[in-house]
Each structure stands twice: as C-alpha cells, then as structure tokens.
Amino acid sequence: MTTMINKRLLIKNLLAHNDENSFYDKKRKIDIGFKEGKAKFLKHVCALSNSNPKNNSYIVIGVEDEDNKIIGVDFFDDSKIQNLINAYLTHPPIVQYENIPFPHLPDDKVVGLVTIRPIEQITSLRKNIWKYYGGSVFFRDGSISMPKVFDLEIKDVNSKIVAAIENHAQNNIQLTLDGVFDFMNKRQDYNPQYKVFKEYFVLCWSGDKKEVKDDVFFSRVDIELINEQVRLFYSALDEVSISYDSNSFNIVEYVRLGLYQSYKYYRLEETTIHFHDNANYSIDANLVFEPPQFDKKILHHIYNANNYLLEKLEKGMSFNSNEKADLENLAASYLICYLNGFNDALPKLEAIKPYLKSYDAKIYSSYKDTIRILRKVKYN
Image 1 (cartoon, rainbow, N blue to C red):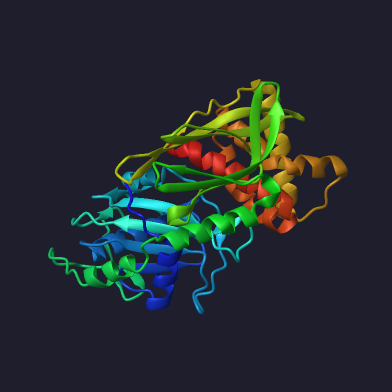
Image 2: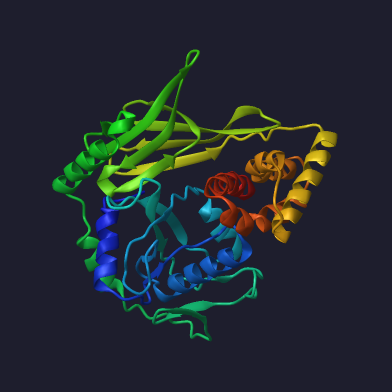
C-alpha cells in the first residue's frame, strides 16, 4: 500500500540534500543476476535496515558517485525481489524496487529506487553467500556498509530528516499535469493514452498496436503511474496484451522462444494493478510461464554446438556466417536447455556475458532479455 510521494522528486531531494549516509546509498548499478552482485545488494539492504529502525531507507541506482550525475540503468521488473530478501535474511525488511523515469534519459533507461521499510529488529544474513557468512550483521558507518559487533539497542537518529525529505516530495496537481504532458509528448509515435482511476490515479500508457486474428497485442509498451512518477512496465521487444476496467489495469507479457527459426509466443507473467477507494493501490504479479519442452536428442546436439561457440568466444576466434547466426540465439538456446533439465547450461549462460557484451550490442541486448526471463523463473 502506498501514499502518493512523487518518486522523481524524492530522488532529487535525496541527491540534493545528502551525501550517502546511514539512511541512503547510491549506486551506479547493481547486478543481482549473479552471486557477487546479489551478495553485495543483500549486504546493503541488511545494513540500511539495521541502521534505521524507525524510518525508510533508500538506495538510488543509476547515479555517478562523484558528481551525482543521473545516468540511469535498464528497466528492472522484478516483482519477486522480496523472495530473494526473505530467502537470505533473518528478520527481512519489506523491500520495494521501483523504476523512475527522468525526461532527459533515453527511452530504455530509468533510475532504480529501492525503498527499505523498517521492522525494528536486527536483520542478519541467514546463510552464506559469496564472501559473506551466515549470521553476519551489517550496519552503515557513514557511507560504508560493514559488519559490526553491536549492542541490542539501535539508535534512531534519522527519523526527522527522512520525514522532512519525504514531505518535500509529496505529489501535487501541477506535478501530475506536467507528468501527463511529458508522457504524451514523449510517446507520440506509439499512440499514448491516459486514464483516471478512482478520480485520483492517473495512468498513462502507449504501445505499438498489432492485431493477430481476434487478438490485439502491443510491443514497445510503456506504462507509468503519473502520481508517483513510477514506470510500472517497459518492454521494447515483447508482445503484451492490455485490458482494464474502472478498478484495475491488467498486463499479460509474452516472450518469444524457440529453436531453429521455429518460434512461438509463451505467456510469461500477468500483472494487475488494483486501484482502491482509499487512495491506495496494489500490484499483483503472477508468473504464468510454462517452459517449452523439446526432444532431448535435439537439445544435446544444440547444447554441444553452444559449448563449441562458447569455446571459440573464450579463445577470441573468428566465426563463419552460420556461427554468427547461431550466436544471436546462443543465450536463448542455453536458457531452453536449462528449462529442459540441462543444469550445466546455467553456469555457461553466466560465462558468455562478458564475451557477448564486447562482441555485439544487439546480441548483448537479447542476452539481457534472456536473463530477465531466467531471473523471473528462478525466483518462482
């Protein structure tokens, strides 16, 4: 449940008023797809939660450390981030990750805002991860998260400062109108629309519409809750179906998967935004993915071919035209192998990241989409 804080204004206030401290941290990026990034993220959440027993803490992602320049990060749509927190932390705080658009950023970039809600208990690591041992307790010491021997009384020193910052970030009619105009202007190519729910919430969305038989799908979908300046959904590639009534807005996301140029669309996730009468809203996201199943013999052949491509990437060798075409599907076909019981495909999928990143921007972009599907599936 959420009160209307304009999150873009909140981020500006955090950046303007404070160096990193015990209730606020900023990062250029985080990567919770892999062990090290996951461990560091959990450490920061643990430290901020312990250092602020009475008020919210924040992590702002997509900001240069030296000069606070907002550079943005990729849209991150993980409704299951709380599952990660619950799996690894004892006395886990409530954690919310939101994507905040800024007008000067490119379409595909946002600022990530992590809100950590207090629970007034000591949070610790439940089990080992990366270099950190189960049972570790972290605190903020200035701008550094560090392990600490602690007394059980946690000092509350930030409540008044945080309350003031949040009060200065309350939404108003002008901010809402500005947000609607910003969206309608920016998205002119893709039929932008807005709808008011419960006489209070303003939702804007846009997408490239196409009709397939009796069904209507959208690609390049962008959906923003203007009251809070939160981007709820963004997808450059995937097909999306949209429906709504007076109380809710529903999005079903499809992903394209297949082998040997034979592809189908599979339902991945259904997200419903519910608008309530008491000026609150809630979001339900459910994974509805049924992984495609393929013949094991064919998959063995593809898995071995993938491993050969990986070996050539590692050795910096050149590729013939067929191999170049196969590289475009390398990540997706490793994912299909993993979803069909080839567990060794997972470390291979991690191993190809740096090679694809330096090899080709378009291939790396499709790699990131593959990892997004994997992340959603793994947390479920």
